[in-house]
Length: 252
Image (cartoon, rainbow, N blue to C red; front, top):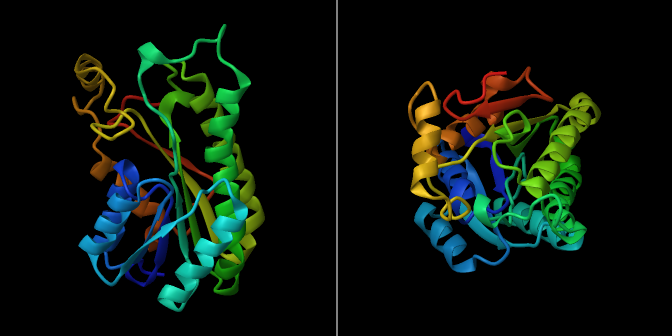
């Protein structure tokens, strides 16, 4: 299915990477659902910017009933099921100086990330898979991190949750593949700049840029273009994969 024919739901779509993904899909002609939990003003402004091919819908991705209602509302709005999901919802601030270290981190911090990242993705996959299967086409793109391979800052809760999401990506690919649904992950490093990375000192951005072959820190727009690949016809034979998009910082 061409990008222009898809109905794309982006969780956490009002800001940062999510907003960049919404704009990238809209640029290609797709209809887009801008999911939001607490950023209603930004979500509605983004949907208005795009026009009739976009709608902003509120749902806490950790709440399965709310997710089901959102997916149903998206179907009503566009008179067709969601074909493509970008699991991007996140509640985190990337400030290494303020992180909880191993000796002090509590399970409540871990659980908060697992709930949003893993439970949220599971809820969206389960809510949208029947519609995708009925049409013999579906694309699930999960947003990961290059900290799997290069844990330069020990964000224990965030990295553990994203690692679990990678495992879910690969097992879901096996289950859903016979129905024509692919499940992949796009993993970035620190992006310049999102709300989540705004607390990062400028010196850290410069240090990372100097370590990449491209001598730059990836932008949300560059990252979003890689997300498009996994929704496009060119990736039709690719599933269960993790693509690192960080300017070549991680190369293994």
